[in-house]
Amino acid sequence: CGLGAGVAEAVVVVCPMETIKVKFIHDQTSASPKYRGFFHGVREIVREQGLKGTYQGLTATVLKQGSNQAIRFFVMTSLRNWYRGDNPNKPMNPLITGVFGAIAGAASVFGNTPLDVVKTGMQGLEAHKYRNTLDCGLQILRNEGLKAFYKGTVPRLGRVCLDVAIVFIIYDEVVKLLNKVWRTD
Image 1 (cartoon, rainbow, N blue to C red):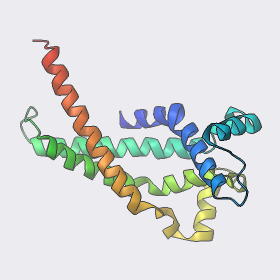
Image 2: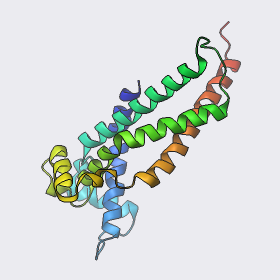
Image 3: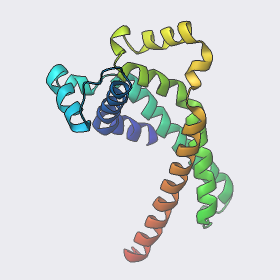
Image 4: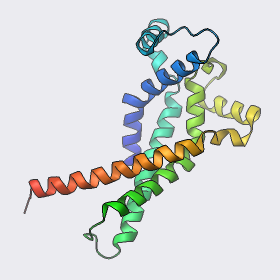
């Protein structure tokens, strides 16, 4: 379930948006930026490279998003099952759901930050340096070392833990509400 959701979101939304974001950020930090704003940047990327220009790093994005959601759903389901023990209907306090969501988020950060670093490399303005996703990863390892695969872990950890905790709390509360509104018994 999580893997499929991650792959779908990677193809439909994440890859084009992340590619544009990364190119825009890199452009804005260059000595002479060529994009006058976000929409101008999108228009120029599509004009110069076609839609393909918004799908750079698709393989890395699919791997990252697929593993991201697979890890989150696996950890969250495992923690829920552990908490509920022999009673699958045992209610979960939203605070507990939030703590479990934060743990699931942390697991996904530690599990796939290396893929996120490779994805960012494949989507940046310097992406032409890499033949493919594997080549990007190998060049990062050769040129920057193993530590480079965990660049940005701490800020990502803070953002993702909170994000995943909130998503799972909202999901559970909406399901409870819908179950009250549309009773099937």
